[in-house]
Image (cartoon, rainbow, N blue to C red):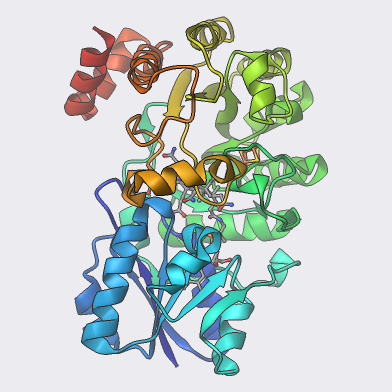
Length: 430
Ligand code: B12
Ligand code: SF4
């Protein structure tokens, strides 16, 4: 069979490769199928791709904010070409009943084994529950070569103010935490890992084939299994691959001084930590399983190893007051966060947070394309503050903090790279 795997694009799309599709392509091909990833984000034209490839099945992958685009595409492909439509990815997994209205089949969850099997069994219809792969190393290497990787490598990935040729690697799947705004609050899949050897093999491949200078680890969290993470760092050093720069997400609870020193030697330039708030009450409310003190100590340990700290923060948590936003601002200053990225709390389908508000969201008829995590007009989860006030707090904090710990020369360089964004930030600061 010929299966087209479609990656739709919207104006807010970030130029980051969809590795889920590359894993699927590898497994479908291992089963004897032909695949083509038609990647609108990389600039490919979907109709031209379908004309050229003439597939038997069209699979479409999407997150929530892509849903209207994915459904419109599905309608067109069904009407014009009569192809069966299979949906997968975060949004169809969270909202299968909605998605199935627009297609023939929805596969929920990690579909590497189930998608090829459903084709073999000729049962690509309705809602299918995938059983996620237990052994990640048993998966063939993702077919990155099915995507225009140079577009992604050169997309201007910015790491600490520099643009490196960067590609992504996934070394684990799942997360042991259950933050209420994240899909892991509802997901039942186990935490699973690629071995350190497999990770190094993949990175070496990216160096040899795509000449990368930097790695973005797309894991939800690195360092959840400390020994394996240490092994990856040691192997990066032994193999000389520590000349590559990299960044990753780590939970504050997992940061230890011996680990940060090793990470530095292994090439780590920046650690991203979801601190979320400077208010303990709100951390507890969002089930963060962490304290302000642990967060502050983690930031200190990372800084002391001479690694930059990128902190992510949320405005709009239920119960948040102006005082809480001030606590967050004070935390960012006190912990000397190098780069603070502030998000507006967005109740994504698939999360425990969404379950609390789904009635209101459905009644308000909010279109999925507004679920961008940066749009304070999407939905206000916080009855303690008016929408207008919450929005004012968000814009103030995000613009004041975005460049807080950059030097003037760094800020000037960034402003020159993106003058429109710089003007927007300055106008919010005034
Ligand atoms: C890496 C990652 C990113 C990367 C790269 C994204 C990419 N291109 O894939 C970056 C950093 C760019 C990113 C950005 C964002 N992300 Co993100 N991201 C992730 C993360 C941590 C891992 C995704 C991943 O690679 N998983 C591993 C692969 C193997 O799994 P997969 O992609 O899901 O694919 C499997 C299945 O879904 C399925 N499948 C997928 N497609 C298809 C298609 C078919 C036909 C079939 C049958 C099956 C199928 O099979 C695949 C193989 O197992 C997830 C968390 C998660 N658990 O999913 C969040 C997640 C997807 N991101 C999320 C969000 C909200 C965002 C942002 C909006 C955040 C922000 N504040 O700006 C942006 C939006 C990006 C944009 N503008 O385009 C949410 C999405 C929630 C939702 N309901 O949509 C998630 C779930 C995190 C969360 N909060 O819970 N993200
Ligand atoms: S630590 Fe990160 S990935 Fe894990 S549940 Fe919380 S937000 Fe999600």
